Length: 583
Image (tube, rainbow, N blue to C red):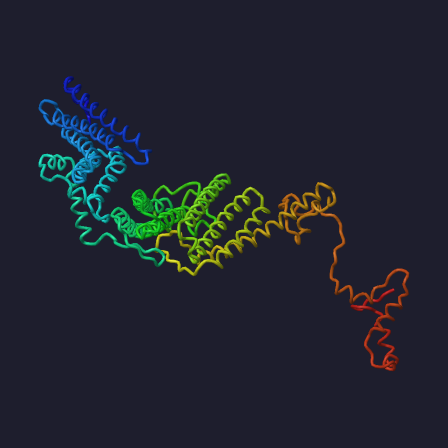
């Protein structure tokens, strides 16, 4: 309530009177709550004398609150606005409801809490502050639910419907002030009742082939919101391009909020039953435990899906780092080549890989949370699927760490991590059920067999590539060690043209391509010609007839008589080739 209006208008007496009534009411209410809390540890609770004292204090507080409403209601004299009067009426209704709660007057208690609920809801929608939201969720809503339970109201009835029915519609001035502040509050309650009558709110919940009945209205409304959020998410994901990871991840906010509300509503319902003394063997408690597992699994599943979207396509398996400069004109076509792009430096690549690893760690933590939910460990099929998912994301995490090692030059560590990742992916492939991949559906905790097979193929290629890199790196290190020890000093001095059969591990020395100026060296020329001419070459110190004798012996002849019959041909053969003779 904005009481500073009285100061501006110079109404000091009215301001003092408002402060006096408000402090009187608060003091009496605080005394009552103090006495009630002092007996909270007693086994028997409040006795009759203590309860009478508490009720008397709350009666005094309620009387002071009513006088406050009357004082502000005279707007001509007080100068209070409609908001001030409404807030005073809601405050008085809360004090009256607390007094009726202690007196066990459930109808009057529900009526006053309903008045406070409607007024504070209208104030919240108009002011957009969290003060009224906390007051509604922590104080008024549980009190309305408890009073309605005492009046045998079904749990499936939503709180807005209960408040609308118990709200005093006969008070035309109050209804008019509420409608001036927010005319949709009372209509929303009618819409909630019509929706309930039309059975748009789900009455059952299915979890792993087990169907349970939803008996709590808050859980039913929250689950209906989850179903609607799923449809909305599917539509948004289809419209967003795969390259816009952050926009697609932002589309998960609605369903995460809806599943969070469902988890809170389920926890509240379980706490209420426990407060009433309902045991774990009661069918209502068992149904709520199944519902609790279902809604928690749904919430964690979409958290994992959001992390998978942020890691990029193929769950971040592909080695993509983006570019240093982004396209400024977003309206350009997708097929148009990007301009002004440059490769990211190593430091930024390492930072992106670190972000990926953090997302994988969050996903693994969420998977461990799912495995701790009641009933999950007993489900063998679900447990096997979760174990396979753990192996899959561990393989992705190790792959990102291996790439970071490769960027800084630790190729041996990268090879070991990739080999470990391949083993993990093979284990995941053997344990994961054959789930079909639907690219149109939003991703969540479910990992398809195609994704695991694609990761295994990628890791196989990366393993072979890094084996070659490690081998080359070992050869390079060996050559560097030999160069420092002096065991092979001449290898670096040989020109490149004479070392074409060796891979230049240390790089190519363009200053030593060929030897210049060239030196004299023996070069093999026409080896076939020299072999044939061997028989016709005369060497110093050798008999000139020896060559001709060798030729005669090597020449093909049938018999010795044919050689003797042709002496002239033998003499002519001594003249050599081209008719030149030899000395």
